[in-house]
Length: 279
Image (cartoon, rainbow, N blue to C red):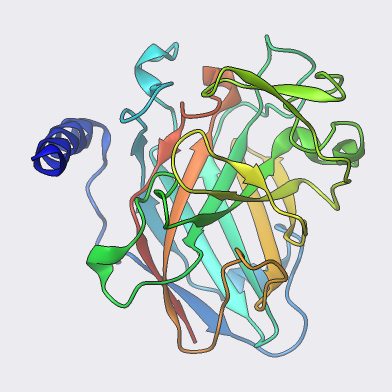
């Protein structure tokens, strides 16, 4: 009985969110990871990306769990689409994400300023049936997701200034706040290798840092648009890493935060699951 009521309530929320979702374009919703030879371009401005076909994926405001997008200055999140390209050489895989953003929010000094950010999400284990996928927004208990989050304020070497897991320079230094559980937690004593954090979650409020921070990335803002590259070995080091293999079809989802709209945590633009097909 409880499950039926929950699913009915969730359906109402999802249907109501469609007012924020642009129409799906004619390209469909499959991201193709093109097979290439040689090194992958780690720079989002590399001309090599011009040879890769992309797909534009619609986004909507996150209104299912607190903090919802309704409370934002615009009454909703800002970003309505994200363009995605992917390539792999059999050993490594890379993604280029692009979206419109008229303001570059890359300096976060305290709780009054907000960063631009973007994330990829994958199930840790891909179920055999689509109906068994983890919940697209942060997974659910027993069905963890692997999240790669790039943060604009960590570019240009600033990743060494902000403690891993903290929101801005000087935040606690030793402790941060878990707003969902209402408690302090000790920050890990490890260093980033760049502006991307490698994370796991099993539901809202359970976001945790992985032991191995092995996802690399780089972002560049120009002309009212962000371009961000993520790349990693196709074989992950942690037991809760997504694993990529040739010919795999893996669910993939996206999230974007617009700092100028004061977006953070659950206040963001999101997608449902789409397909990643690896050539």
